[in-house]
Image 1 (cartoon, rainbow, N blue to C red):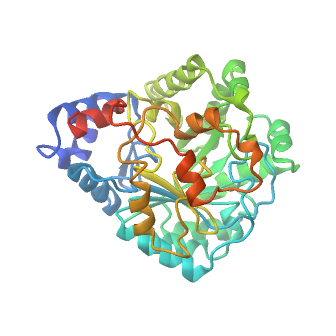
Image 2 (tube, rainbow, N blue to C red):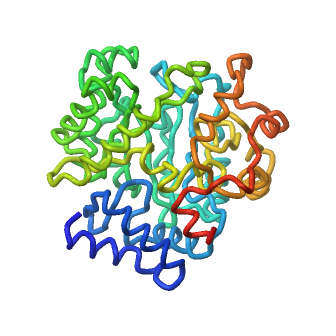
Image 3 (tube, one colour):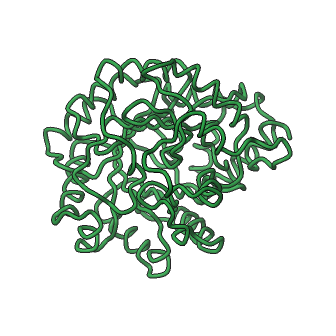
Length: 397
């Protein structure tokens, strides 16, 4: 990170000065040297883990950190279960069909806004299947940054402009491979690669901040595919490359062999640092293996992150098919309070990774599991468990 970028980041986090432990702030600024700050539409961005600065959403983020509150800083809301693809890694697989009405979803958005959420991601299914998506995006702002997770299905120039006009913060398009044939084979639909490329081009033209995401499976790690995808992202002009780690859940439930080794996780961390610290015009890397490592912020599922499926079931994250309540039957505030019994602090290590290693999810037919069963399966917080380093310094442990 250049001196100028360092000064910009210091300005970005200056509201924390004197209000959080100095050790935490020093640690945060030291770790952020592995990020790639950049400007878009007169705002400074690190990656989509953080809201843009300046913004009302970033102010909310800082306020929650200063107050050391357990707040759902980020929330992913599935707006539909409908999707034209059947990907073999789909984390939504096994959930029943159905979706909340426009009025119900608007009410849920208002509730999570009141809870202090500063980033909301709209997912599915394929969220572009809903013609009222832009209304949800507009309702979330300006207090919440908004992300749409899509395959790019059916997106045309008019829809790209409509998304831009709604004030969306980022549109992330899923990509399975830099090779069109391999991508199409995973999606199961010929032409889906071109659909994704075309969607990103139209969104860029409309002035939307774009990203693409992929699952960093071991084949991609060892074959050099991640670097090829990075080069493709540079060519396509995407601003960010979100890199996920495989988890044995959804359509991959029971596939424990798909989980990465410690060395492979470290490869994803190294990929994050190497590209972010190399000068150039390539996309920012946001690798979950790095950002959610025990050296950084750990797993915030149920503590600073939550997922609501299309039927209103509230789960710790989109990868964890355990329900703690339904927003169509009780308030989000009451459900969030209930979750606090299991998630009073963030964890080191992926919650669903631990659950999938201890529970055979293949014996269940439908997800998410009911509240009582979910509470039995979900590992309780052990007060002696170590906190991720970023939180240890913040919370004074």
